[in-house]
Length: 436
Image 1 (cartoon, rainbow, N blue to C red):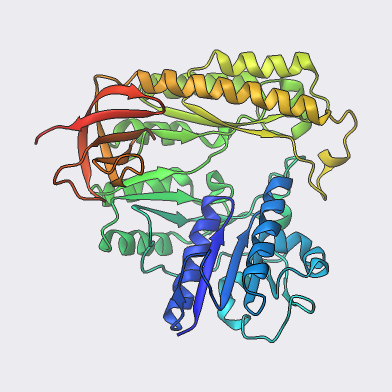
Image 2: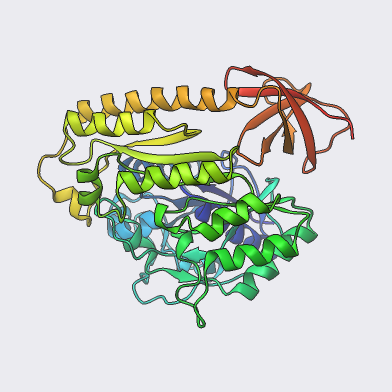
């Protein structure tokens, strides 16, 4: 039996697609092994959203080439999509597959190739008008299943390479989404995360035109035994209907991740972001007024071209006055093919690093402040498994995205339990299971 190993970088969409790749190879009789084990095939499902992600993709490919020079080494996905020739010149992969080709991996891996003379199959995504739908039987290794409902992006923010590697926005048909939801529930999943590249645009390209709130309304009502969570969603697409559904439906997780990128209006305009800081703040307050226990996360970029110290302080102070739950901080990374890479007034690396550090310190403080609000309260937790730090404890995730540990009893993973929060210890809430 041939062996394969797969490593995934980047977003939840990549993780969903890696699950598809894994299942397709398993059906052909391949056996999956860990990425640091000897294998016949190594697959790196790459990311290129930042220069660091591209670097990590190359490092993984180099590592497995050293470990087993005779193996088939596949560079798949976004980095391959935009840098196929560069990858070929580096001699670190035998097969280079784009985002379309990686989902048909079995048709490509048997083509003879070497790292010095690689096989390249990158058709591009410019002309792709639909999402290839393959029903997953399972989502191994996780208690929460990811479900891709949309791909691509039409926004073309000036710093972002994603539209160039993922193509135009396109939606999975609702009937296919329903089938996948039912398949996951049949396999015992109690939480499903709906994900996409620009998830708020789901349904706009379908005939008849539909909306994300329309889809959510149907699945929340039809499957009350399962929790549903949405991945990152853009500010203008957090609609009144979505907030009302979250406030009304107990199985709609009280968690939103809404990218901000900058708290300075001048920078948002240069980024080609379709909102102002004032709009974002009003949306934040409206959402928390409707859903008091809401966990709100955001993305922020430090050191975008033209960001002066004054403009950075506008961003810092803007976030500081909002009770956000956490944030993901990214130093600006100039990406080839994007307008921002050529903008004047590029911020020195030392300034980007310092500003990112300040924002990460702010994020750590915000996270602790948010978590502390729930000491003494009872939260529903999806049990994920034993704590790595202390096997006497189980850990899991609340509806509002809080990591919670509690004493292990007869509770099994992948079940929902009510946990009374007793204290905040380091970056984790500690509690005990309430008896039913």
